[in-house]
Image (cartoon, rainbow, N blue to C red; front, side, top):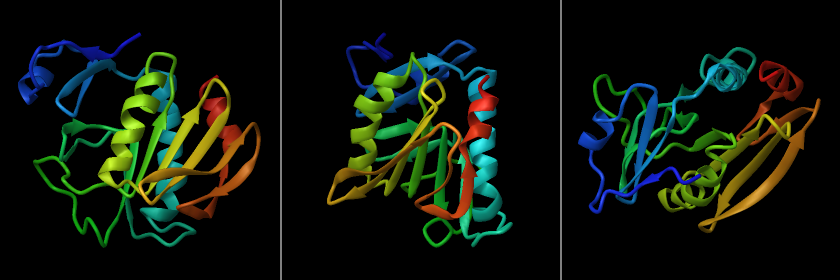
Length: 191
């Protein structure tokens, strides 16, 4: 299933605003991509990942702090007037404060996408190369159906896979390797 909408022209914010309720849109390289808003299981896994990473890295609980970890933030980057990964993180050195009433215009250092049958191709074929071009340093793909976390690091403009983790593993994954993640909790959230 293609999420791309054929407009015959570059997509704009007006196209996003015209979407009916229940749909989420992103614009990458002038193309509008539309998908249903995440459902409860997807949102629950987002919350767990955000809590597992945000506790030690945003709030400093048992970890270093110094990050902003956000769920579906509105980000505006060159070639993408609107992109909203499932989760994104910025070191506070690169984003000292969150903007109040405008999109974030700083490239996130970390992005996490939760794969679903409807968005898998879009996340891997469109967003992955976009994130590399934009300069995102770490990319995680969480697949609730396969019970896997695939982590990659950007090296010389290419994604280097640093590990595939799954099932009931307890893991430490860069850039958040200070905190141990219990992956079994994520899969139970999607059950």
